[in-house]
Length: 344
Length: 285
Image 1 (cartoon, chains in turn blue, red):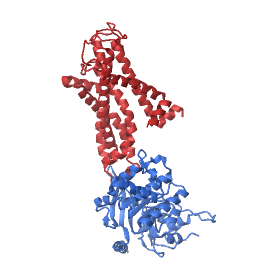
Image 2 (spheres, chains in turn orange, blue):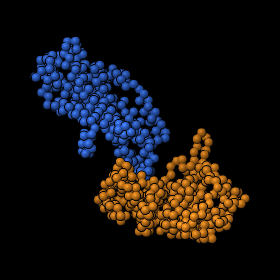
Image 3 (cartoon, one colour):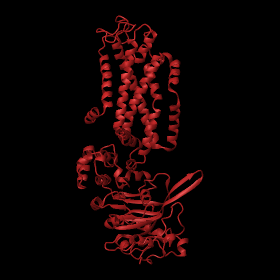
């Protein structure tokens, strides 16, 4: 069974429709102080594929390893974070890149093919320099244009994103949070990348600006036909924008599937509770909460990491790690009793 | 820029006073280019004349006009200070930014050297060098030596800022976009620490001039080149205070006080301008 799971994404990798293939990825924070080795398993054995031209959502609570996962697949990790096993393979238009086997190719592909809207990205603009310098510093080297042509290209791009070209002459503190966020997206997409990673791009914004930013990301994605990984803990944002959704729990994938199916018919008990916690208009009943709290990733529970909190756990859950298997609703789920749990 | 200067002049008394005092010094330095006498020539006017309409600040026992000597001295002394400040700033910025950004073992080694140099007493080292080098110890050599001793404190200050910049989002973004370390330091971090550099430059200038005056008064520099300390040295050598030629000592001292006060006022007001917290503290918050 385990074997079957391993081969499945690999055969899919031959498919030209796949933009990113992650296979058995493990990335730990490894501390080695005074001979005592401590591991924090932030990303533990994750396999997934992302297709071209789709928005893939990653959801999960704080410290479930969302940001660690996308940092790892962008190749943006620094010690003490270390890739312990597995592969990350991008399939760009001009050839595949294996992130951790071909670091120099990966370096060249960043920003040009792969861009990354980082967490807290409202602060990616240097507070003491004008906005235009951020564009020349970060993007111009990847575009091989002379300064005038580059400037024209940036202004055209900003105009498409409904931003006034005058903002290029401004300092970041002269702009509002929403404008800075839109500028960051403009900065990340000016090279027209095939793959965009967005880490909590709407978290610090109010709902109106959030709506704007989501529409903007959708617009850019439609125009460039690129793949987007969209990370946020806000389920309503996922419902609004993503095509497929993955739920992470304690460094592992719990469930993955078409967004609509996950919301309509969650299979994993954790997902059931997560969806059940969302407010619904007209429904005034108290939301049922799970007992306990997410495990510490330095000392995760054996077997299924959710079993100590799971309402339908069986003995097997504590002993064996459930594999990601195709679920009844067209996705994949890692649970021995998938689909058996419902909140009354 | 001009608006900032205008507002500072209007609302900040220290800045206004500092500007006036430094303008006096700068006017004096400008005048030194039009001196009627060679700055090294002696016995060109009647010696020991008190201040009068003809000799504004009197003349020295060596037959030089005090006014033109002070003008030339200010020129030389300030130039010395600027060279020391400039060279030591370059070292302080490079060491601070590199140490703070790279961190780890590199940081530990650089800071160990930094702290060792910082703990060494400056004056005894300079005196030792003066005794060893003797005639080779020109004012330029002295400036370079002082610069090599005068950067340690400021590099630590800059490093402390660089340490925080290292973890900012824009640095992570720059790394992700493939900027080289040198580009990140010069284009992203340097503009950020510039206000600190600006402020410490003035403090360093004051320190360097004080050092030069100290060494010159003791006669441990090129005594034939007119400097403020050098003038006092010659006045002492001719027992000016005993023989009643007070203007030979008093005026150089007055002007060096003006220079120090002016630089101090400027440094203080600029610091207040770039650090909002001290501005708030002054408002009583």
